[in-house]
Length: 427
Image (cartoon, rainbow, N blue to C red; front, side, top):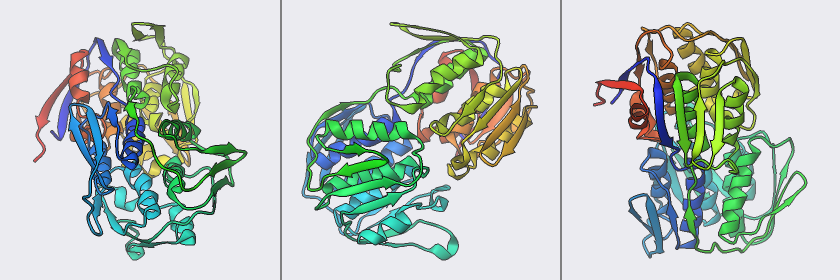
C-alpha cells in the first residue's frame, strides 16, 4: 500500500509492543560475531533484513524460523561483498567499523535518504586508524561507500553529541582489534541509553568494556561467545500505542518492560505528564484519554519519540516545547519539518526552531487533508494517531513506509478500533 484513508475513531483494545528494533540489531550482531546462538524476537521488517543481509558475509549462516534467528559458522565468504543497508542507518553505522576491524574490503549501498546521511566521525577517525573510505564526496553522498584496510586499535576522541550509533559501531568493532583502545568523549554524551543498551548486549556475549569518566576502555583480542538472546518489546513503537490511547480512548499495552534500558521508556512518564490516565499492573499498561496539557520536553536522549510527542502536544491545551532534536533533520526525512508540515495541514500551530518545535495545542484536528508521509515510518504512524481525533477523515501517503520498522502497524491499529482503509496500492 502507499496511501490509507484514516478516519476519526474510538480506540478500545489490547496490543503488544513489537520486538525492539534497537535490541534486535545489537543481538543479531553479537550472535553473528560469535558464530552461534540465537535471537528470538526478530520481526520481518526492512531494517532487520538489512542487518541480517549484512551479517551473512561474516562467515555465518542465519536461519530464521518464525521470529527466531539461529546462527552457525560457515565457510561462505564473498570477495568484496556489496552490503545493502536499504534505509537503515543503524545497519550502516554498526557494520562499517566491524568490517573494518576484520579487514574485509566491501562496499555499502542504500536507498532513500540514507546515501545523503553523513558518515560523521567515521570520516575522520577511521582513516586515522588504518581504514580508507572511498565515496563520491563531490555529489554530497556517502553511499556507495567502499572500505579498504584494517582498523587498528588506539585512542578515539569523539564528540558525545554525535549519533550514538557511531559509538556503538566502535564498541562492537574495537574488541576484535589487536591491542587496547580508548574512546574518549570531548562533549557530553547524547542518547546515553542507547550506549547502555549496547554495553548490556555486549556483556551477554562476554565482551568486556570498561566504563571510565568521559568514555570507555576496550581491551583488544576478545572473542564473542554464543548466547541465546530474547528481544524485549520496543518502547519507541510502544509510544505510538500509548498515544493512541491518550488521544483516542483506551488501550492496554503489553510486552513492554517498564524497567527497560531503552531510553524511549521515557514515553510512559511523558504521557503521564501530558495528562493521560495511566495505570500500570501485571496484566499491562492501560492508557486512557485524559485532559491533555502542553509540557516542555528535552529530546536529547529520546529523538525517536519526537514525532509522536509533537502530535500529542498539538492535541493538548497550552504550549508544548521540544528542544534538543536537531539531529532529526538527518533522519529518513527532516522530521522536524515533516511533522510541522503535517500538523499544520491538520490546523495545528507549529513553529520550527533550530533544534526543536514550539507547538500551540488545540482540542483535536481538522480533517479533510492529504498528509505527505515523507516515506518516513514515524511520520506515517504519528499521523495515524492524529487521525483518531480529526473532525473528518484524512489521507496519509507513503503508508508502506511502516514496513521499515513495524509492518503490522496498521493491522494492530485496526484491531484496536482505528479505521484505516487502503486506497492506493504501491506498485
